[in-house]
Image 1: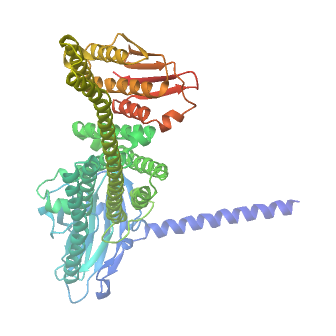
Image 2 (image 1 turned 180 degrees about the vertical axis):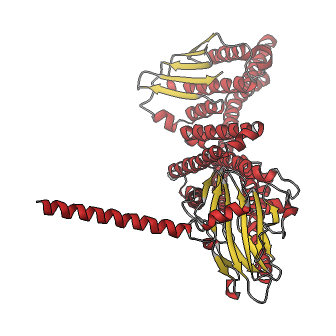
Image 3 (image 1 turned 30 degrees about the vertical axis):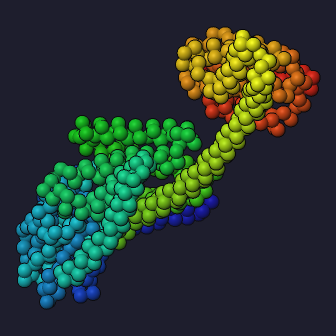
Length: 622
């Protein structure tokens, strides 16, 4: 037993000693480290050297010697500090130069570092020389070369090696610092290619902006205006993101560079959400999502307003501002995707184009945010994923808008065709009605006026009438002519109103009909529009004509009542009636009554049973 205990104790002691030796070796290795010495050769032209950099951070500005010695004892290399950072970042490397002493350049491929100071120290010297002080928060003329990235000349004189130390200030925000080494001639050739590709890239933006502007000026539709605002802001954002805005738009400003991307982000979110509202007509189609999108617009607009008036506080707390901004971007895209998915049921192709377009932006946005947090490294390409996704997005969206225009035009053509058919139908109905009215007038003139005049002529020829009787007969003919004329176009509307005109019609009808008509009016305004007055009169006239021809009734009642905001006209008779909807389907007069009621925005209903007469109810808005 003691032997077993002794063995366990010995093993424990050996393990602890071994662990201590390992820790000591690691510590010694770290302490005895040095800043990377990199020998430059022809094959290094256009090579990324980020992984070769020794890096460190300090909370305050310190002497370059202090940092260099710290980095010599540190194991931090390359992109170790990528992501959000609260301190100053230092990056150093020693270059061994080739014998031909070609002019080499160093390029930091991040145009959004606020301040950069380049220190160099040639072999055999203890003095650090400040070679450059530049950055996004300085005027553009502080740069060694006119380029959207930061490019520095690696001048060593006759020395065989040179120590290079960068001080990078992007405190309280995200940083990455890919560094590339170039020969001057190679860099100049690469720069020409870059600007050529950038010209093509923004040419696409310019074409989309021009097409959208023309579409908006022609149609004046809000959807084109908001898409125009969105694309223009997106293009300006990408122009700034590449670093060209500082070079071409505000080269003499040291202030705009630090804020313009954030403000463009605010505008992007606002215009994107309003465009989404217009694209999917969310006010009508999805009221809840509409309120969410509007709420997001108001929140972002409020943050932008605060940023304008509390710039210093926002700058001090820019980390939290960026978190809110990223959250707003992702929320906007999520709601837009949800809206597009729901819109698939309404318009499949339009919604599909929107989903594809913003799939690129969503994917690129996620990569961008992950790189901002240092989880992923940014790709070492001319255009970042967010820039590539943006141009693909606007291409698909302009295709979606073009498709929407095509769909709208097809619907407009279909609607125009329906209107044309309806107009032709109405014209035919008008012609048929006019022809029927002419036939009726011809019959009245022939059967009534013609026969009476013929009889009067015969009586005069045979001298059968005395003067007094002759005058009475002529007066009867005059009254009949007046009655027919009144049926064609009543003239009393402007003088006596609908009430008196209808009463006169009823009186004339009662005088010439075996059916007894009664007319009642209750609370009807004295002044009605001419359209309402004429159409109501024609409806009553049509109804009386139907009763005379088909009902075999002895009595009919007509009532016109004003009830709240409605005019209600009821016409009832005690005639033979009809079964179900048979009379409505085949009766021209009842169809005409329905059409006239529809012209006034009202409805007409009919009810009847064989032997129970007919009841007509017309309801009109008033």
